[in-house]
Amino acid sequence: MAKILYFDAYSGLSGDMTLGALLYLGLPLDYLKEGLARLDLPGYRLAVRLVEQQHIVGLKLDVILEDTTPPHRSVSQIHQIIEAANLPLQVTERAKRVFWKLAVVEGKIHNTPPDAVHFHEVGAVDAIVDIVGACLGFEFFGIEEFYCSPLPLGSGFVRAAHGLMPVPAPATLELLAEWGATLTPTVTLSDGSEYPARSEMVTPTGAALIATLCQPGSLPRPAMTLQGVGYGFGSREFSWPNALRLWRGETIGPHESKIENRKSKIAVSPPMGENQNLTQHSALSTQHFPLTPDPQNSVLSPQSSPAEVSLIETNLDDMTPEGLGYLLERLMQAEALDVYFTPIQMKKNRPAVMLSVLARPADEARLAAMIIAESSTFGVRCSRLSRYMAEREFRQIETPAGPAQVKLKIIGGKVVEAVPEYESVAALARTSGRPWREIYEEVKQHATQRGSGEIQV
Image 1 (tube, helix red, strand yellow):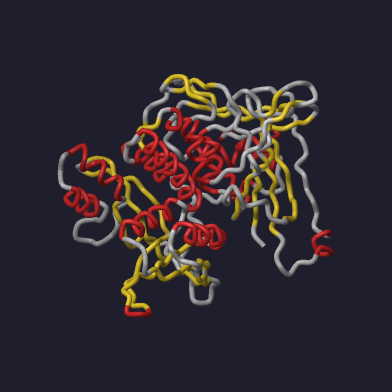
Image 2: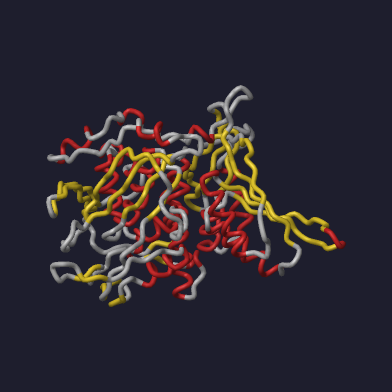
């Protein structure tokens, strides 16, 4: 079984709708605030209120900004903010992948390399809060697999930093096209109103979340045991409850019978009244807030159960180097843990390569389908491997060249190595004009006490 979250986006979705629905599901507000406080993002506050539309109640979350002029941040700057927060590894990785996918799409639209893209709206404080906050919620519930319903995109125009844009916004449409979204049809309701609404119903932030984390849009929601439902309301009012509905549960394993599954309790979160009661809206204590590295990525003793990783492989003897390079890029963008090629010799004396992809078990089927679609192979082979990993943390240190990010390798609670992060070193090299290797060695040396070999963090 896998813990699953299903985005029932009958009225679209956005980052704040996702957060509202997670809070309604039972995500403690104190947990969310404590995690977001670790980001170096001053000048905002969270406001949560109960909303009722068409006799359906849910939560509306707003990120109230003190400065309404959003700064222009690059994806590397946003990654540095997230890494410096020292959040759980899964939260950090998911949030970074969401912003990287946004950068790739924006770069494609504007014919710019992803690392040269400077975000406007999605680089603002509220967008970072929405995405990182959602990833904190997913971590809190231990979500392993994500699925999404068909989407209503809306119509009309929306005002953005570049002026009036058609709905859906170009970034939203590109994200959903790459993900393979299924779209809902346009219908006229009994009261004469049109569905989808003539409005923006899926925002770039919402599209980035599902395009990064959800299984392909063509896949239906799997059979699941329902454990909770959360309603997160949007800002507008339509002829229907304008809410994102999140279903939380577990997939039904192949050996479970229908009779056994009927015994599972279906628990729907009750409505809440006052904002001050939000932290009590969960049977899970906020004392278990896991703002330490993911225990699955800690050093494991031989007696412990190792973490599991999927290995997907196939042999390719009829693809060009350009095609292989594109395939590697696509797989990394699709959240593969690692991708590599090994030279091999195949039948008929053909030189070839073996493609190997390391992935999370929950991503195995999706990435296998992508390999078959994007390459010349007719099939792939999959296996599960045990993986032992050192604990890791991200820290920011001061160096003569400027502030830099380092990744710490931790064994038995002791830091044994500090590795400079590429993007952080590259940013310092660009601004100073000095060679990248020189900056890298300086940061690495500064992270280690001279002559002692001990890590200085």
